Image (cartoon, rainbow, N blue to C red; front, side, top):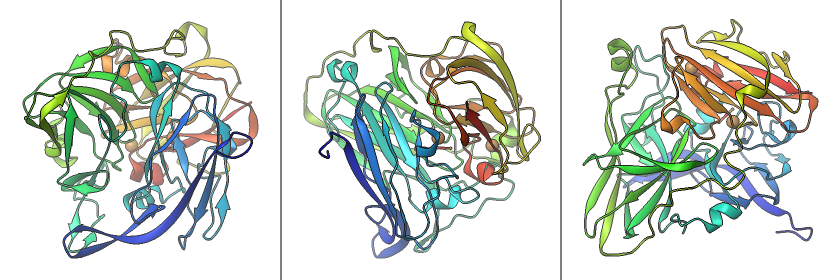
Length: 432
Ligand code: C2O
Ligand code: CU
Ligand code: CU
């Protein structure tokens, strides 16, 4: 914290190497280290500043995924950090407690930069989250679980795309926080897992090997109004879920990723939909510290702070295709949509094509209104910045644009399957 009370972070993008398996050094990139990045943490109301230094030999950027902030601080493709240079964005945190993350966003090379290891979590706290009886001791009963899939070719990563896989890169194994065959020792009766799908293309359906129920307590942009008990939660690339799991003394249980629950057979077969993985083993101590019950009410008095479709002054339609959104590939110098500051809109996302996509919007947390005309399932009822739009699906979302206006610098919306994004499934909007 500097003298005017601003919380200052230093992030140095660097090249290095990591020994994932004995004796095999894999070239990797990281923030402040050889692979991945530190968890940043700030509180609502705080001013933050990040000194991003790029020591790589190519330009990159750092985007604060899920953060509500001015467009020129967003770290998208218009805020490139050249090789050897420094970029120092700053903003005031003004959104509820949540599990956000950061990663590069150079147009056309995001998949590569994320796969090499540039990703980290950015956690936000607020008064409400500080008071709630949820597990919250970082690294003890509150664990970051960043899931990525990977394939090794000898000592190196193999980032090649598989035959007929149109979602992009699909690895043959998963790692958590950059660790293969990971386990976590749990000393408390309840443990909170902050699940982040930081993979570039793979969609996970998380659940436990004994099918136990867990409580979903938060989605991309914050806590739910109330916990929702379930035994599977699906995350497409970029999405997060906070879950609380109850453990029995001495037991072991494995968080797995299961085959997709739906989707067409062809699509599943070639795009990882039939795969399953052991993601993370939880090992409970013989004696567990008792944890309080998960509170029945989670969100603060201000509620979820989600926009209301009744307030919408405008609707827009987005046709999601591999070749581009609304028929056009991304162009850096074209503004696709202009929204009015302080207004609410309803966006219809339609995937009429023959492959899976999702949709992410910078700066905002939106409400999912319906999926194929039906009320969304509990995992889609909270604050969201990314949503899956399966083949043939129509998803409607309500968004409110209440940040500062800036006619000159756009925010992005895009498919978060990174090879699709890189190939142009992205558009730009300005808030005026
Ligand atoms: Cu996580 Cu525009 O990205
Ligand atoms: Cu983002
Ligand atoms: Cu896509």
